Amino acid sequence: MEKLLELDRLTKVFTLGSVISRVRITATDSVSFYIKPAEIFALAGESGCGKTTVARMILGFEEPTSGAIFYNGKKGTKNEKVWFTEGIQAIFQDPFGTFNPLRTVDRYFFETVQNYKLAGSKEEAIRLIDEKLRAVGLSYEEFSGKYPNEFSGGQLQRISIARALLTNPTLLIADEPVSMVDASLRMSIVNLFKKLKEELGVSVLYITHDLATAYYVSDRIAIMFRGNIVEMGPVEKVLMEPKHPYTKLLRESIPEADPNKRWDTVITLADTEYEEYLRAGCKFAGRCPDVMDRCKDEVPPDIYVDGVLVKCHKYAGE
Ligand SMILES: Nc1ncnc2c1ncn2[C@@H]1O[C@H](COP(=O)(O)OP(=O)(O)O)[C@@H](O)[C@H]1O
Ligand SMILES: [Mg+2]
Image 1 (cartoon, rainbow, N blue to C red):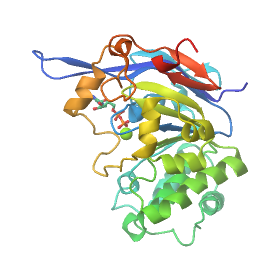
Image 2: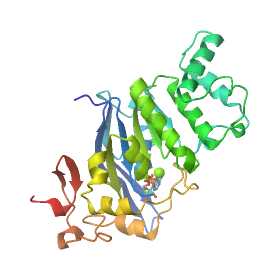
Image 3: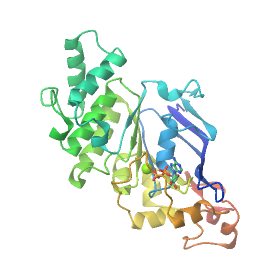
């Protein structure tokens, strides 16, 4: 089977606090998954579970504590990062933060064209830019010479997707791409990912806490809780017949995004988050309705149940 991107036991430990009370948080604990060509893979879970840390390691903004990342079978190293390829592009949560309010948005496009030498003349550049804008339902005419504030959040997010497409990427990393977009426009943006997958063969790592859009758009999904993938498999199975007690709980209560929490500025931990991150056994033991004695001190194994990976003692010995 062809793997476009593969994460092999990716671990990131953050050290927080002062010298006296130092706390080590394993923000991602041996996270492994792969994404196939032309596949939408969702990484879902509530705020603080480690989703953005995964994205930041793939994009090279954060060095993994241990583990490896492969892109097209090639291992990324400290000097040779897989993410330096134009084949991987990112779409950020806050479209207004992506563009400087004092610059016209088209300048970003011309810069990208220049940096990657994507066109030989201005006409050629405009043709390319227009082609990518049309792929997201816009055009060069309606965008040329305009400033970010002349667009809605939804339009700006489409514009960032169009810019990401300039280099003909094979993989888009989209971290909460619709959480700051009007609820009424969210579906049209995630639909775009589906269209790009079907028409251009682009893969998407769709990071979200919104299970409804994840269900609608993705092929497979991984559910994260406190640094661990607790359930992973085809989206239909994971969300319609959830096995992990956390997935079951998550299905019933879908938390809203906090628009003030940008994907690069999270440093404070809530008290419960600390406690859960520092748990010895299953991190979910404190909230689990099915908790057993061993859950409190034994880390659950990864078990395959009906083609779905579940990290839960309940399924051991089945
Ligand atoms: N730079 C950092 N320094 C210290 N702790 C961090 C840092 N980035 C993230 N964390 C912590 O790691 C955990 C996972 O965070 P994050 O990956 O942002 O989660 P999510 O994107 O799922 O909300 C959180 O407890 C967060 O506070
Ligand atoms: Mg995040």
